[in-house]
Length: 162
Picture (cartoon, one colour):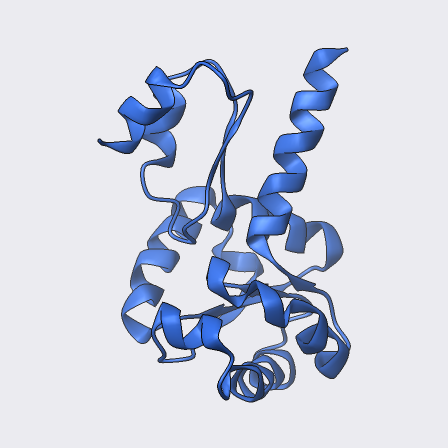
């Protein structure tokens, strides 16, 4: 079932989170409901901008970057992007942890030291388990975009209830 139909037919949810970093179907889902719909890329980037002037993104693959850049241009945020660099791993490899953290630290350091990022957004929901150790290694804020989106969704629902 297409995502918009799922959102339209769900009568039990107060908000929705699209937990894929490219935010597929975000606008279409928003058009299909009065309830709030959050995309993890949008929420992750907005959270990073609340923490730092510039941000970098650790992407899953090189082929993801043009799609992310198009989205950031649509959001009007490319001037705040320090850089985006790929892990060149699959989502499953990223989530498994085998060598993932070391590679994320390497890429995070390049984003920080070479590109000027003052916050890092992890470009995949599967990277979540690495947020804290990556932040500890880099010494700058590291944003788990899924955590950012869920936090925004909870806050919106709580705020709307009053």
